[in-house]
Image 1 (cartoon, rainbow, N blue to C red):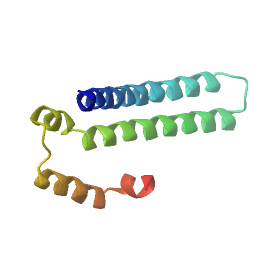
Image 2 (image 1 turned 45 degrees about the vertical axis):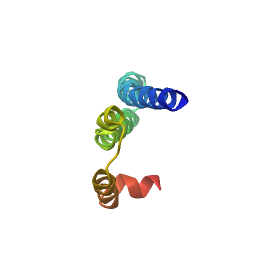
Image 3 (image 1 turned 90 degrees about the horizontal axis):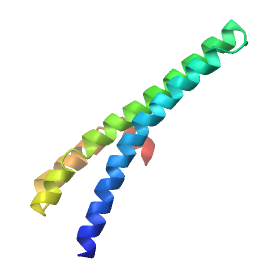
Image 4 (image 1 turned 90 degrees about the vertical axis):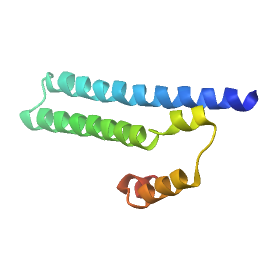
Length: 104
């Protein structure tokens, strides 16, 4: 029973992580708009806006990366098994993944 509870908690944490990354991207975009509306110089406004857009893009890219990496988790949980072939496929994807190198 505790194992099932841990799996449920993990899946909820994964869902919340994806939702948070989308929210955070929106927050950065809003910050960029509000900081651009101030009385700074044109260069400062342009820089603030570009920085905010970059931060939002990074969060959305991370969201997409996690969503892709976690795409089979629901199936694995329902089946109760992770086959060796699926594990090898996952490892092969990590070898070719530029984000994986950064995270390690």
